[in-house]
Length: 440
Ligand SMILES: Cc1cc2nc3c(=O)[nH]c(=O)nc-3n(C[C@H](O)[C@H](O)[C@H](O)COP(=O)(O)OP(=O)(O)OC[C@H]3O[C@@H](n4cnc5c(N)ncnc54)[C@H](O)[C@@H]3O)c2cc1C
Image (cartoon, rainbow, N blue to C red; front, side, top):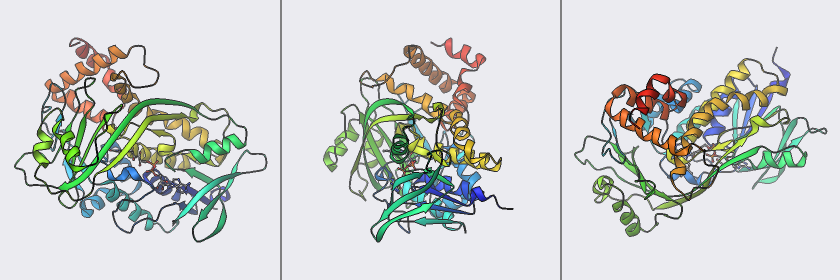
């Protein structure tokens, strides 16, 4: 007998968090409706509702595995759509202070490099094949509607250009809007406590453009140049993407913003710590305008600490936790959260307990990527609560990098952690820690 409590679910937002959550839920609900304010393009193209999509978006191995779990055959779909297969440790040259480049090694697994619009289009293509998922476009959700006693979310209201406001009933509503406005607004209306927030003020500025990918006679497909922090925060990603192109994103923190005119942009590229990217792109034909993006802070909302939260409501993706984009984690964490949601629904966790269990279960998934954010405090201007042992942690990180350069096994482990395949705690195992500390 179908569970009457799992008849209809509404997902707000068709970004990577919304699409992956919809797929997870569709296995357990009769019908899922994704409500999106944008017009979604039929092909891989940028759109207004996700202005960040024109900047470099790395899909980490942990995210790729999660997508493959949710959508069997996903890697094949990516390859067929033109995503570039990249061998970790080998195909993307990695430049960091003291290691230009970091030792090149085949670390034994592949990831894919592509534009964010391509990744989203492939994911959307899979969603559209699901008979019980519908996408309702050009519709902006304006309100979550709770039961009379406020203990359960029962419906949402949306507005579209085409007609009057519409109310849709739902047994489960997932906010995947990239912000958390609707959920916070509801908690306020119900006089319920809002989640505590941890913010790290990074004042990050990106500028990006797509250029033709030249046959440049090098043994790498892309390049990452890290800054000489804290003296400078200027860094860059040059990623191979579909159609023989490179996506180049450059950026800085705390006021060091790259300009959007071509000459100023190239001057910024030339001022990077190494000349590698400038030399690679100086003669490459630009294929798009330069676009910019500013991100004041990373933010983590501690829903797991709340004592009461309405049943039938969840938040996921950036609405829950927005990471510093330079670590490339947001989409991968969103996909991993969807896998956890799928598991909880398969275990038949009752709706009354779903939010509590979901918010608790994803904490381990968030802990590793959020733990990396400690590196943001290397800049004195970064705002937030500095860990009391910051100097020690940064020294540990530097010594670990040295050891990873010497030892291929340690190199592999550090990459597995940064690719969200292993928890950060793996870097503190006693035997490894003793070796790291001997280099401090
Ligand atoms: C410059 C930059 C670079 C980044 N690089 C990376 C990277 O390399 N790797 C990585 O994994 N992540 C990266 N990220 C983060 C990544 O973009 C997000 O983590 C990821 O998009 C998941 O977000 P989401 O689906 O939660 O939200 P979004 O992608 O922002 O999607 C939210 C969706 O909800 C819709 N929406 C919003 N409000 C409403 C409403 N009221 N009604 C209906 N629809 C609504 C929006 O139109 C949008 O489609 C980067 C971010 C930035 C800013």
